[in-house]
Length: 113
Image (cartoon, rainbow, N blue to C red; front, side):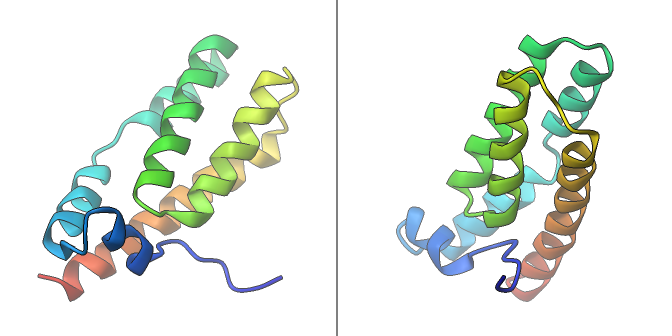
């Protein structure tokens, strides 16, 4: 198993035609994303429809921003939600990955200020 990649900066920058300022701005905006809270609330309420929408949205954002590990974790959780068999460990893994991704985003922002 290789290193965990939280942000694939080169790939993310390519998605915005190598406009690193724009990419950093999008990462900054992502820090305020509420999908994790929405997802958590939906799972707590056992509202699988809302949970699936939140997981799918997070997966899409992670893909668009090249947040590699968050993409993998949200894709796995979305699959579990669809199968109506959510493993609490997956929810924890997603939350931990989200927190670590935010930490990495802070570093990228600081480096590109």
